[in-house]
Length: 313
Image (cartoon, rainbow, N blue to C red):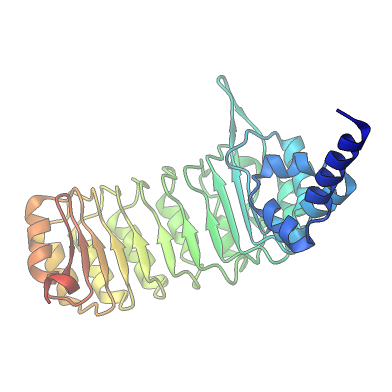
């Protein structure tokens, strides 16, 4: 290839990469995953500046990666900023043991840097015993500890301090150690509108009563796989949660048609979604009979998902 052709090719390459408008190049960077973004930042100074643009780090999702505590600290120090709105962290588990990738100093750093953080999701974190709930950013409106190992009494500090004045959504899916003591502490979060207790099999009727009498702003309650609750829980829900919109009770096989009747008699006019999958056939039939005429009501059962609003037309 002649020198002239080489110069022409180099010129075209330079134009195609470095002469793109800044907004176009930044848009391209938006499509990169976290790992590719970090690699791109090492290509040249221009790419480094683009890869570190705060608009690219509004959502920091670290779930696909096995990240040590040391690396996690570097990421938080370099990438998390006041523009970060969501942060997802997955617990680090090896074939032989659970490794630490979360600590109170790390959470304090997140609290200091992500002053506008809205959602914090911790997945499969088995070492919450090493961190205090007081280290969590108080500005968040959504907290998830899905499938994490929550130590007994971990929420106790909620009774002493208003740690999360704006918390609206709390997800505790498959946090199997959640007990009555924890529920008592969680009931201090008066701003909650969504409470997900799916798979928290220790939840009993007394816990449901505590929830609905203290958290009256709830519009979504998920009790799927809470297999110890019975009809009396539905009496409490119908009496106290007048604004409830979504209620999930799948696999709560102690609930009977009487519970469905109690729910219906509560005149929950805002209820638009009811999940009763894996409840008894009698319970499901009773629910279909009672709620099928409700406009806009969606009943989710084992065999069918019936949109009552469409069915009634």
